[in-house]
Length: 360
Image (cartoon, rainbow, N blue to C red; front, side, top):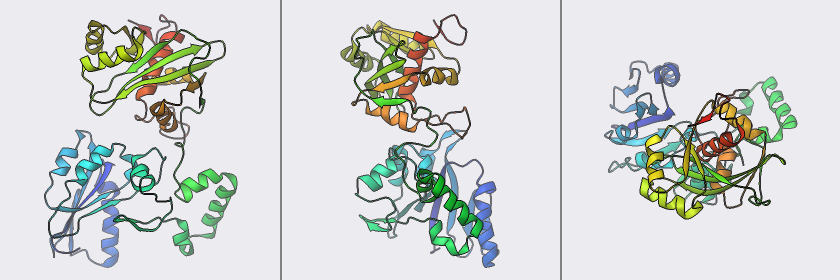
């Protein structure tokens, strides 16, 4: 590294850099025979000759979001975001990005990632908006793209490994394109809901109500109108609100403008907000939540029909996924409208006295 360079190496979550990343650096240092040149501790690698250093930090830690402390670090001219696909919030990226502004040196931002779905802000910002095809290698608009696959290292791979790759390509070409060749997905792997389509809302004129999930600053308030056809086993969904930063008065006005006096089912964990909205004329009731799984199972029993305008619901359905294959644990993301819909479905389909869910 050149003299005085400070590199910030981050992952969205980095519980223990000394157990995961730093050993890789140590291995390379030892292979080069430079043990006496570098000082290594649990969160930093320092070049003793030119005083350049690499700081290892997590954006999200057990203490909460560390964006504010990261952007206040002094002298950073290179930011490496590893496993960048895990960073869902583009605003966090922008906050740190704009703090990398050292004078008289070329500042660099490096994103290392495995492509996920095309709904991700990285795809929209660096590929779709720039007209860059997936797999492109080269420079466009001051961005250098390096797309690497196993083909770049084929001569160092065993024949058995290459045979496994060949088998995956033959058996599951979609998996081969994504996992092996680094293609972007139209929808996430392991999505929770594959039982949905786009169509007309409530064509049979069923009685409707709404499901609501509260957000505020980071997460959006979401309001979805719901019609449940128990005979045809269909749930019709129409998105009305999906917006951040609404205060109680603004939210109440927007709700009344969108759905008037239609009944709204919301999360009982926000009694004060529900009381405020009631006071402002909103017809809203709380539902106490049980397990996420039981509510999700209810929704999976039905075909979900969403309107063409319900773009945020579609985005969530394409990306709300299980944490691991075979797991009943869900990622805590892309679930704001889904949570509101789940409250509504539980209210209408479960007996309030059944135990897990009941209306207060």
